[in-house]
Amino acid sequence: MKTINLTAFLLNFSKLIDQVHSVYHLQHVQVAYICLRLAEAIGLSEDAKMSLLYGALLRDLGVLSLRERHSLHQTDLPSQLQHSRFASVLLSRYAPFQSVAVLIENHHRSFQDTDSYSDEERLLINILFFSDILVRRITKSQTLRSVLPDMKDLIHSSPTFFHPAVTHAFLALSIQDAFWFSLEKIVVEPALLSLIPRLDGVALDEFAKLSETIQYFVDFRSEFTILHSSGVTAVAEKLAVLKGCSAEDCLKVRVAGHLHDLGKFATPAEVLEKPVQLSIDEFALVKAHPFFTHVALKDVKGLEVISEIAGYHHERLSGTGYPYGLSAKDLRIEARIMAVADVFAAITEERPYRDARSGEVAVQILEGKAAEGKLDAEIVGLVARHLKDLCDYKNEQLQPVQDLYHELMTNLIFS
Ligand SMILES: [Fe+2]
Ligand SMILES: [Fe+2]
Ligand SMILES: [Fe+2]
Image (cartoon, rainbow, N blue to C red; front, side, top):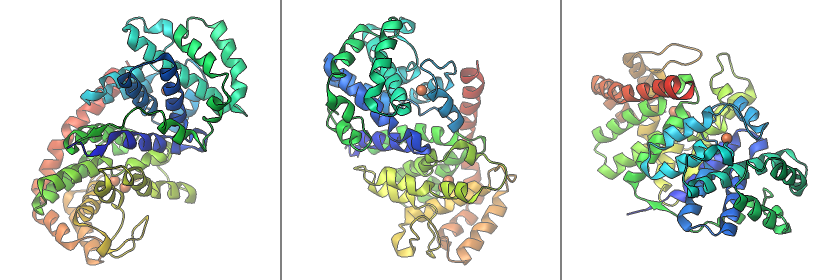
């Protein structure tokens, strides 16, 4: 059963990526809106529109730091293209997103630089390339429409940048006031929704393949968290099996493990990696991440339970957790498992301000928190009794992730 609304999830995810700085709020949604208006004007198929939509919503998913985002924002043809390569290599691991990965890989390439692709691919790439440039200019300008003379200059001075069908469609659209007004942040999301030709549904096991890929984007933003979501997922999944959860609930735990720190996209990597004590504002930003995880997932059809398992991982049975200050009665067993797995994984990982600690030390700390009424004592008991199994399983799961990270960093990104 295709119960999960993939389209709604990707829309929320794109908003989270843009939460990192107020300048970029809803920028991916604006790009998606322009792409679909151009696609409609050109008369593209439904499938082509859906590829464009997903390419637009995820185009800068591979940007690791706020510094990188600011520098990409400065120019039409950035020379540093690690972010597009990084995103396309990781996204193409999810088979249904092969065509989306091609769009993202090339979203900063002008029309003349894409001649190795088919005619249809070149057209879609160019729609995204054009929309990206337009939105960057809009973000920098006082009023939306004031970018039009600049865009016309660019079209005339750089005829090899754009596909003729794209410039033709844009010039026709640019005459309408409503095209420009629809890009205002207060209306752009409903305006986009009205253009989306269909909502794609996926089954939970299919979604688990995508969430596995997404966790790498979450974790690889900081050297200190490369293995974090993979480690949390391995421990949580094992604990769910030991606790006797059903196969479907174990799969939900798996997906929630992948996505539990998704909200960290709203935190600049510079803050996540800071080796010294955080300021009050920076600490507040970090502390907001489970809230943003929950918000990104809770309204997506099919992810209601997963949003709780993932979004409540910093809540405590005693009511002393965050962001909602929930207590035992509100926390389902899978959310309690996630809280324990998250603490266990975090303690056994290196951090900017301390070394990794052993599984035995982690158990001691977990037992202390269970004694204080914060973590579920039964789950902590399972960790203590199955420590070796849990550590072996976790290490086995982490090896391929470690290899993937090194392959990406050495061979692909900086070659
Ligand atoms: Fe980009
Ligand atoms: Fe967290
Ligand atoms: Fe975490």
